[in-house]
Image (cartoon, rainbow, N blue to C red; front, side, top):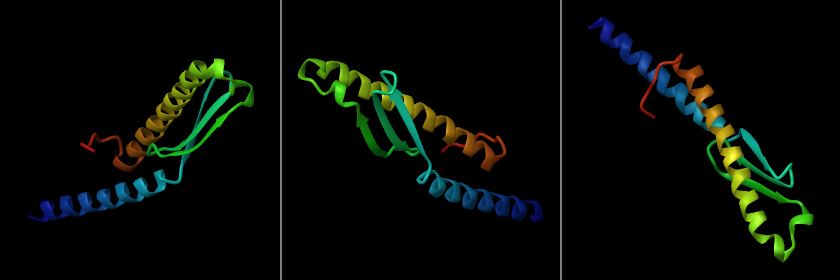
Amino acid sequence: MKDMMGLLKQAQAMQAKVQDMQAALEQITVEGHAGGGLVKITLTVKGQIRSVSIDPSLLKPEEKEIVEDLVALAYENARHQAEQIMEEKMREVTGGMQLPF
């Protein structure tokens, strides 16, 4: 029974660490780039878009499809960075143990 109580306390401590980590992740931002930096998207590690920057040279009607593609690529670039940071932070909190979050 003593082992069970210790295990329960460890689980509660880990849960608190995960909650703290999730709150911290809301403050961390990443920036995705596309088109050699002509399009930039900043988002939180949790995926919330904070800003989009498009170089004025792309703001021509004939460049519409290119801009759309670059925005999508910049978002994917930022999202990939965010996923890597989240995985790293989760490993730090869980000590590498795989949890179903």
